[in-house]
Image (cartoon, rainbow, N blue to C red; front, top):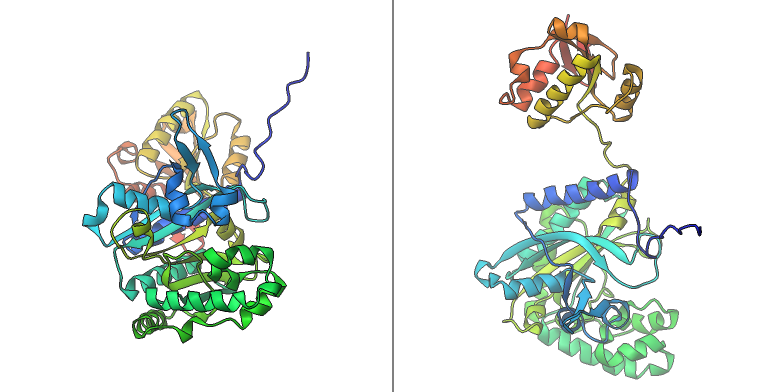
Length: 439
Protein backbone atom coordinates (compact mmCIF):
# COMPACT_ATOMS: atom_id res chain seq x y z
CA UNK A 1 0.00 0.00 0.00
CA UNK A 2 1.40 3.37 -1.02
CA UNK A 3 2.28 5.69 1.81
CA UNK A 4 -0.06 8.66 2.08
CA UNK A 5 1.86 11.88 1.60
CA UNK A 6 1.27 14.47 4.30
CA UNK A 7 -0.08 17.74 2.83
CA UNK A 8 2.26 20.70 3.17
CA UNK A 9 1.19 24.29 3.94
CA UNK A 10 0.64 26.66 1.03
CA UNK A 11 3.80 28.63 0.24
CA UNK A 12 3.79 31.97 1.98
CA UNK A 13 1.58 30.84 4.88
CA UNK A 14 2.56 29.80 8.39
CA UNK A 15 1.26 27.89 11.39
CA UNK A 16 1.73 29.88 14.59
CA UNK A 17 2.29 28.25 17.97
CA UNK A 18 4.23 28.87 21.16
CA UNK A 19 6.23 32.08 21.32
CA UNK A 20 5.31 33.07 17.75
CA UNK A 21 1.60 32.88 18.56
CA UNK A 22 2.10 34.60 21.91
CA UNK A 23 3.89 37.53 20.26
CA UNK A 24 1.12 37.74 17.66
CA UNK A 25 -1.62 37.66 20.33
CA UNK A 26 0.24 40.27 22.38
CA UNK A 27 0.25 42.71 19.45
CA UNK A 28 -3.48 42.20 18.85
CA UNK A 29 -4.37 42.51 22.56
CA UNK A 30 -2.31 45.70 22.90
CA UNK A 31 -3.95 47.18 19.80
CA UNK A 32 -7.42 46.32 21.12
CA UNK A 33 -6.64 48.00 24.44
CA UNK A 34 -5.14 51.14 22.90
CA UNK A 35 -7.86 51.62 20.28
CA UNK A 36 -10.47 51.55 23.08
CA UNK A 37 -8.55 54.28 24.92
CA UNK A 38 -9.02 56.46 21.82
CA UNK A 39 -12.69 55.58 21.30
CA UNK A 40 -12.25 53.54 18.11
CA UNK A 41 -15.09 51.11 17.43
CA UNK A 42 -14.27 47.56 16.39
CA UNK A 43 -15.30 46.34 12.94
CA UNK A 44 -15.56 42.93 11.29
CA UNK A 45 -15.41 42.73 7.49
CA UNK A 46 -15.77 39.95 4.90
CA UNK A 47 -12.55 38.29 3.79
CA UNK A 48 -13.92 38.28 0.23
CA UNK A 49 -15.12 41.34 -1.67
CA UNK A 50 -16.19 42.09 -5.24
CA UNK A 51 -13.01 42.58 -7.27
CA UNK A 52 -14.21 46.06 -8.29
CA UNK A 53 -13.84 47.25 -4.69
CA UNK A 54 -10.06 46.97 -5.03
CA UNK A 55 -9.58 47.61 -8.76
CA UNK A 56 -11.48 50.91 -8.45
CA UNK A 57 -9.82 51.97 -5.20
CA UNK A 58 -6.24 50.77 -5.73
CA UNK A 59 -6.14 51.35 -9.49
CA UNK A 60 -5.71 48.85 -12.31
CA UNK A 61 -2.09 49.93 -12.87
CA UNK A 62 -0.89 49.17 -9.34
CA UNK A 63 1.18 46.07 -8.63
CA UNK A 64 -1.38 44.93 -6.04
CA UNK A 65 -4.18 44.80 -8.61
CA UNK A 66 -2.19 43.69 -11.66
CA UNK A 67 0.13 41.14 -10.02
CA UNK A 68 -0.72 40.32 -6.40
CA UNK A 69 -4.48 39.92 -5.87
CA UNK A 70 -6.07 36.53 -5.38
CA UNK A 71 -9.08 36.93 -7.67
CA UNK A 72 -11.40 34.25 -8.99
CA UNK A 73 -14.82 33.80 -10.55
CA UNK A 74 -17.33 32.20 -8.20
CA UNK A 75 -20.04 29.74 -9.26
CA UNK A 76 -22.41 32.60 -10.00
CA UNK A 77 -19.95 34.13 -12.45
CA UNK A 78 -19.03 37.08 -10.21
CA UNK A 79 -15.41 38.18 -9.86
CA UNK A 80 -14.39 37.83 -6.20
CA UNK A 81 -11.11 38.82 -4.52
CA UNK A 82 -9.52 37.84 -1.22
CA UNK A 83 -8.95 41.20 0.43
CA UNK A 84 -5.38 42.51 -0.08
CA UNK A 85 -5.90 45.46 2.31
CA UNK A 86 -8.56 46.90 4.64
CA UNK A 87 -9.20 50.50 3.61
CA UNK A 88 -11.21 49.81 0.45
CA UNK A 89 -13.42 47.29 2.27
CA UNK A 90 -14.04 49.78 5.08
CA UNK A 91 -15.00 52.45 2.54
CA UNK A 92 -17.35 49.97 0.82
CA UNK A 93 -18.96 49.07 4.15
CA UNK A 94 -19.34 52.77 5.00
CA UNK A 95 -21.31 53.33 1.79
CA UNK A 96 -23.38 50.16 1.57
CA UNK A 97 -24.48 50.30 5.21
CA UNK A 98 -25.37 53.99 5.16
CA UNK A 99 -22.96 54.89 7.93
CA UNK A 100 -22.72 58.49 6.72
CA UNK A 101 -25.24 59.37 9.42
CA UNK A 102 -22.67 58.43 12.08
CA UNK A 103 -19.78 60.47 10.68
CA UNK A 104 -17.21 61.18 11.84
CA UNK A 105 -16.51 57.52 12.58
CA UNK A 106 -13.43 56.13 14.31
CA UNK A 107 -13.08 52.50 13.19
CA UNK A 108 -10.58 49.71 13.81
CA UNK A 109 -10.16 46.23 12.40
CA UNK A 110 -7.60 43.43 12.33
CA UNK A 111 -7.35 40.14 10.51
CA UNK A 112 -5.83 38.24 7.57
CA UNK A 113 -5.05 39.73 4.16
CA UNK A 114 -3.81 38.04 0.98
CA UNK A 115 -1.26 39.04 -1.65
CA UNK A 116 0.63 36.87 -4.11
CA UNK A 117 4.19 38.10 -3.67
CA UNK A 118 7.59 36.63 -2.94
CA UNK A 119 7.65 35.45 0.69
CA UNK A 120 10.45 36.95 2.77
CA UNK A 121 11.25 37.78 6.37
CA UNK A 122 8.11 39.11 8.02
CA UNK A 123 6.17 39.10 4.74
CA UNK A 124 3.75 36.32 3.80
CA UNK A 125 1.09 35.65 1.18
CA UNK A 126 -1.43 35.33 3.98
CA UNK A 127 -0.47 38.06 6.41
CA UNK A 128 -2.28 40.01 9.11
CA UNK A 129 -2.73 43.69 9.82
CA UNK A 130 -4.16 46.01 12.42
CA UNK A 131 -5.93 49.02 10.93
CA UNK A 132 -7.36 52.29 12.24
CA UNK A 133 -9.39 54.81 10.24
CA UNK A 134 -11.26 58.06 10.84
CA UNK A 135 -13.94 58.68 8.21
CA UNK A 136 -15.82 61.95 7.82
CA UNK A 137 -13.34 64.28 9.58
CA UNK A 138 -11.55 66.85 7.41
CA UNK A 139 -9.72 68.49 10.31
CA UNK A 140 -5.94 68.04 10.84
CA UNK A 141 -6.77 67.03 14.43
CA UNK A 142 -7.93 63.66 13.05
CA UNK A 143 -4.50 63.09 11.48
CA UNK A 144 -2.86 64.04 14.76
CA UNK A 145 -5.05 61.68 16.78
CA UNK A 146 -4.21 58.72 14.55
CA UNK A 147 -0.49 59.48 14.69
CA UNK A 148 -0.50 59.92 18.46
CA UNK A 149 -2.43 56.67 18.81
CA UNK A 150 0.11 54.85 16.61
CA UNK A 151 2.97 56.31 18.64
CA UNK A 152 1.38 55.14 21.90
CA UNK A 153 0.78 51.67 20.45
CA UNK A 154 4.46 51.27 19.52
CA UNK A 155 5.51 52.51 22.96
CA UNK A 156 3.17 50.11 24.77
CA UNK A 157 4.48 47.25 22.66
CA UNK A 158 7.97 48.31 23.74
CA UNK A 159 9.23 48.59 20.16
CA UNK A 160 9.49 52.37 19.76
CA UNK A 161 13.26 52.43 20.31
CA UNK A 162 14.91 53.03 16.94
CA UNK A 163 11.57 53.72 15.22
CA UNK A 164 11.23 57.07 13.43
CA UNK A 165 8.03 58.77 12.31
CA UNK A 166 8.60 60.09 8.78
CA UNK A 167 6.09 62.68 7.67
CA UNK A 168 5.21 64.48 4.45
CA UNK A 169 2.39 66.46 2.88
CA UNK A 170 0.90 65.73 -0.55
CA UNK A 171 -1.02 69.01 -0.51
CA UNK A 172 -4.65 69.64 -1.35
CA UNK A 173 -6.07 68.91 -4.81
CA UNK A 174 -4.76 72.08 -6.57
CA UNK A 175 -1.33 71.65 -4.95
CA UNK A 176 -1.07 67.99 -5.84
CA UNK A 177 -2.27 68.51 -9.42
CA UNK A 178 0.29 71.26 -10.02
CA UNK A 179 3.07 69.17 -8.48
CA UNK A 180 2.07 66.11 -10.51
CA UNK A 181 2.18 68.08 -13.77
CA UNK A 182 5.64 69.42 -12.89
CA UNK A 183 6.88 65.90 -12.09
CA UNK A 184 5.57 64.48 -15.38
CA UNK A 185 7.35 67.26 -17.31
CA UNK A 186 10.57 66.77 -15.33
CA UNK A 187 10.66 62.97 -15.64
CA UNK A 188 9.82 63.15 -19.36
CA UNK A 189 13.00 65.17 -19.77
CA UNK A 190 14.93 62.30 -18.12
CA UNK A 191 13.23 59.31 -19.74
CA UNK A 192 16.56 57.98 -20.99
CA UNK A 193 17.75 57.15 -17.46
CA UNK A 194 14.49 55.98 -15.89
CA UNK A 195 13.94 52.30 -15.12
CA UNK A 196 11.34 50.28 -16.99
CA UNK A 197 9.03 50.32 -13.96
CA UNK A 198 9.28 54.09 -13.65
CA UNK A 199 8.57 54.61 -17.34
CA UNK A 200 5.40 52.56 -16.88
CA UNK A 201 4.44 54.72 -13.90
CA UNK A 202 5.17 58.01 -15.60
CA UNK A 203 1.70 58.62 -17.01
CA UNK A 204 -0.50 57.00 -14.36
CA UNK A 205 1.56 57.07 -11.16
CA UNK A 206 4.41 59.61 -11.48
CA UNK A 207 4.63 60.23 -7.75
CA UNK A 208 5.69 56.62 -7.22
CA UNK A 209 8.93 57.32 -9.10
CA UNK A 210 9.99 59.42 -6.10
CA UNK A 211 10.19 56.33 -3.84
CA UNK A 212 11.73 54.01 -6.44
CA UNK A 213 14.55 51.81 -5.12
CA UNK A 214 16.34 51.72 -8.49
CA UNK A 215 19.72 53.56 -8.18
CA UNK A 216 19.28 55.48 -11.47
CA UNK A 217 15.73 56.47 -10.55
CA UNK A 218 16.88 57.69 -7.15
CA UNK A 219 19.47 59.96 -8.71
CA UNK A 220 16.86 61.57 -10.97
CA UNK A 221 14.23 61.74 -8.23
CA UNK A 222 16.61 63.55 -5.87
CA UNK A 223 16.53 66.66 -8.08
CA UNK A 224 12.81 66.43 -8.95
CA UNK A 225 10.42 69.31 -8.14
CA UNK A 226 9.38 69.39 -4.46
CA UNK A 227 5.80 69.60 -3.18
CA UNK A 228 6.69 72.64 -1.06
CA UNK A 229 7.05 74.73 -4.23
CA UNK A 230 3.41 74.07 -5.13
CA UNK A 231 1.62 74.12 -1.77
CA UNK A 232 -1.39 76.40 -1.46
CA UNK A 233 -1.77 78.51 1.66
CA UNK A 234 -4.53 76.16 2.86
CA UNK A 235 -2.36 73.07 2.36
CA UNK A 236 0.56 74.71 4.18
CA UNK A 237 -1.70 75.61 7.09
CA UNK A 238 -3.04 72.05 7.24
CA UNK A 239 0.44 70.53 7.43
CA UNK A 240 1.52 73.11 10.00
CA UNK A 241 -1.48 72.19 12.17
CA UNK A 242 -0.54 68.49 11.99
CA UNK A 243 3.08 69.07 12.96
CA UNK A 244 2.06 71.49 15.74
CA UNK A 245 -0.32 68.87 17.13
CA UNK A 246 2.42 66.25 17.13
CA UNK A 247 4.80 68.64 18.85
CA UNK A 248 2.19 69.42 21.50
CA UNK A 249 1.68 65.69 22.14
CA UNK A 250 5.42 65.08 22.38
CA UNK A 251 5.55 62.84 19.30
CA UNK A 252 8.90 63.13 17.52
CA UNK A 253 8.83 63.28 13.72
CA UNK A 254 11.10 63.98 10.79
CA UNK A 255 10.26 65.39 7.36
CA UNK A 256 10.69 63.06 4.38
CA UNK A 257 9.89 64.96 1.18
CA UNK A 258 10.21 61.75 -0.88
CA UNK A 259 7.45 59.97 1.05
CA UNK A 260 4.47 59.74 -1.32
CA UNK A 261 1.24 57.91 -2.05
CA UNK A 262 0.82 57.36 -5.78
CA UNK A 263 -2.97 57.16 -6.07
CA UNK A 264 -4.84 60.34 -6.89
CA UNK A 265 -7.28 60.15 -3.99
CA UNK A 266 -4.53 60.72 -1.39
CA UNK A 267 -4.28 64.24 0.01
CA UNK A 268 -2.32 66.12 2.66
CA UNK A 269 -0.65 63.91 5.28
CA UNK A 270 1.40 60.85 4.38
CA UNK A 271 3.43 59.05 7.05
CA UNK A 272 5.43 55.97 7.93
CA UNK A 273 6.96 54.68 11.15
CA UNK A 274 10.30 53.23 10.03
CA UNK A 275 12.87 51.04 11.79
CA UNK A 276 16.35 49.81 10.87
CA UNK A 277 15.75 46.49 12.67
CA UNK A 278 13.96 44.74 9.79
CA UNK A 279 16.45 45.17 6.97
CA UNK A 280 15.42 46.85 3.73
CA UNK A 281 11.69 46.45 4.45
CA UNK A 282 11.80 48.90 7.34
CA UNK A 283 8.24 50.27 7.50
CA UNK A 284 6.31 48.95 10.51
CA UNK A 285 3.24 51.22 10.25
CA UNK A 286 2.08 53.56 7.52
CA UNK A 287 -0.85 55.54 6.28
CA UNK A 288 -2.18 58.88 5.16
CA UNK A 289 -5.18 60.98 4.28
CA UNK A 290 -7.34 59.70 1.41
CA UNK A 291 -10.08 62.29 0.94
CA UNK A 292 -10.95 61.09 -2.57
CA UNK A 293 -11.36 57.33 -2.06
CA UNK A 294 -15.04 57.13 -1.12
CA UNK A 295 -15.89 59.37 -4.05
CA UNK A 296 -13.93 56.93 -6.27
CA UNK A 297 -16.26 54.16 -5.08
CA UNK A 298 -19.37 56.09 -6.05
CA UNK A 299 -20.08 57.88 -2.79
CA UNK A 300 -20.13 61.57 -1.91
CA UNK A 301 -16.89 63.47 -1.33
CA UNK A 302 -15.84 62.27 2.14
CA UNK A 303 -12.65 63.13 4.03
CA UNK A 304 -10.82 60.20 5.63
CA UNK A 305 -7.46 59.28 7.11
CA UNK A 306 -6.03 56.01 8.39
CA UNK A 307 -3.09 53.69 8.93
CA UNK A 308 -2.27 50.00 8.91
CA UNK A 309 0.53 47.87 10.35
CA UNK A 310 1.59 44.28 9.77
CA UNK A 311 1.06 42.18 12.89
CA UNK A 312 3.84 39.72 11.98
CA UNK A 313 6.33 42.56 11.52
CA UNK A 314 5.36 44.21 14.81
CA UNK A 315 5.59 40.84 16.58
CA UNK A 316 9.13 40.35 15.27
CA UNK A 317 10.17 43.57 17.02
CA UNK A 318 8.69 42.62 20.39
CA UNK A 319 11.57 41.57 22.67
CA UNK A 320 9.48 39.02 24.52
CA UNK A 321 5.76 38.48 24.73
CA UNK A 322 4.24 38.40 28.22
CA UNK A 323 4.46 34.87 29.58
CA UNK A 324 1.18 32.99 29.63
CA UNK A 325 0.38 31.88 33.15
CA UNK A 326 -2.32 30.60 35.45
CA UNK A 327 -3.07 32.00 38.88
CA UNK A 328 -3.98 28.69 40.48
CA UNK A 329 -3.10 25.11 39.59
CA UNK A 330 -5.09 22.38 41.35
CA UNK A 331 -3.42 19.12 42.35
CA UNK A 332 -5.70 16.40 43.80
CA UNK A 333 -4.43 13.29 45.61
CA UNK A 334 -7.03 10.54 45.63
CA UNK A 335 -10.35 9.84 43.87
CA UNK A 336 -12.50 11.93 46.22
CA UNK A 337 -10.09 14.87 45.95
CA UNK A 338 -10.15 14.47 42.17
CA UNK A 339 -13.92 14.91 42.10
CA UNK A 340 -13.79 17.83 44.50
CA UNK A 341 -11.07 19.62 42.51
CA UNK A 342 -13.06 19.17 39.30
CA UNK A 343 -15.91 21.04 41.01
CA UNK A 344 -13.59 23.67 42.51
CA UNK A 345 -12.01 24.23 39.08
CA UNK A 346 -15.43 24.95 37.62
CA UNK A 347 -16.28 27.37 40.45
CA UNK A 348 -13.01 29.29 40.16
CA UNK A 349 -13.27 29.69 36.41
CA UNK A 350 -16.84 30.92 36.71
CA UNK A 351 -15.44 33.66 38.94
CA UNK A 352 -12.99 34.70 36.22
CA UNK A 353 -9.84 33.28 37.81
CA UNK A 354 -7.13 31.73 35.66
CA UNK A 355 -6.77 28.16 36.87
CA UNK A 356 -6.00 24.73 35.51
CA UNK A 357 -5.64 21.08 36.47
CA UNK A 358 -3.80 18.33 34.62
CA UNK A 359 -6.06 15.61 33.22
CA UNK A 360 -4.00 12.83 34.77
CA UNK A 361 -0.73 11.98 36.53
CA UNK A 362 0.62 11.51 40.02
CA UNK A 363 1.17 14.58 42.27
CA UNK A 364 4.81 14.94 41.17
CA UNK A 365 3.97 15.00 37.46
CA UNK A 366 1.07 17.35 38.06
CA UNK A 367 3.35 19.69 40.02
CA UNK A 368 5.78 19.68 37.06
CA UNK A 369 2.94 20.60 34.71
CA UNK A 370 1.88 23.40 37.07
CA UNK A 371 5.43 24.73 36.95
CA UNK A 372 5.46 24.56 33.13
CA UNK A 373 2.17 26.48 33.10
CA UNK A 374 3.84 29.26 35.17
CA UNK A 375 1.31 28.75 37.94
CA UNK A 376 1.54 31.42 40.61
CA UNK A 377 -0.10 29.39 43.37
CA UNK A 378 -0.77 25.65 43.67
CA UNK A 379 -3.75 24.31 45.58
CA UNK A 380 -3.11 20.78 46.89
CA UNK A 381 -5.81 18.63 48.41
CA UNK A 382 -5.92 14.92 49.31
CA UNK A 383 -8.71 12.62 50.38
CA UNK A 384 -7.72 12.92 54.05
CA UNK A 385 -7.53 16.71 53.87
CA UNK A 386 -10.92 16.75 52.21
CA UNK A 387 -12.44 14.86 55.15
CA UNK A 388 -11.17 17.64 57.41
CA UNK A 389 -12.31 20.40 55.00
CA UNK A 390 -8.83 21.83 54.54
CA UNK A 391 -6.56 22.39 51.57
CA UNK A 392 -2.93 23.45 51.14
CA UNK A 393 -1.96 26.66 49.36
CA UNK A 394 1.62 26.83 48.05
CA UNK A 395 3.41 29.85 46.59
CA UNK A 396 5.45 28.57 43.64
CA UNK A 397 7.99 31.38 43.78
CA UNK A 398 8.94 31.26 47.46
CA UNK A 399 8.02 27.63 48.14
CA UNK A 400 6.11 28.66 51.25
CA UNK A 401 2.81 26.91 51.93
CA UNK A 402 0.00 27.00 54.50
CA UNK A 403 -3.26 25.17 55.15
CA UNK A 404 -6.62 26.89 55.07
CA UNK A 405 -10.22 25.88 55.56
CA UNK A 406 -12.60 25.01 52.74
CA UNK A 407 -15.35 27.52 53.39
CA UNK A 408 -18.82 27.95 51.99
CA UNK A 409 -17.67 31.26 50.51
CA UNK A 410 -14.93 29.51 48.57
CA UNK A 411 -17.42 27.18 46.90
CA UNK A 412 -20.05 29.89 46.33
CA UNK A 413 -20.01 30.81 42.64
CA UNK A 414 -21.56 34.19 43.48
CA UNK A 415 -18.53 35.34 45.48
CA UNK A 416 -16.44 37.73 43.37
CA UNK A 417 -13.05 36.92 41.89
CA UNK A 418 -11.16 39.46 44.03
CA UNK A 419 -12.68 38.10 47.24
CA UNK A 420 -11.96 34.50 46.25
CA UNK A 421 -8.41 35.31 45.20
CA UNK A 422 -7.81 36.87 48.60
CA UNK A 423 -9.32 33.83 50.32
CA UNK A 424 -7.00 31.45 48.50
CA UNK A 425 -4.09 33.59 49.54
CA UNK A 426 -5.25 33.47 53.12
CA UNK A 427 -2.25 32.79 55.27
CA UNK A 428 0.02 34.17 52.57
CA UNK A 429 0.79 37.85 52.76
CA UNK A 430 1.54 39.56 49.46
CA UNK A 431 4.83 41.37 49.21
CA UNK A 432 6.36 42.77 45.99
CA UNK A 433 7.65 39.82 44.01
CA UNK A 434 6.83 37.09 46.49
CA UNK A 435 4.41 35.56 48.98
CA UNK A 436 5.43 34.79 52.55
CA UNK A 437 3.64 33.34 55.60
CA UNK A 438 2.02 35.82 57.93
CA UNK A 439 4.03 36.51 61.04
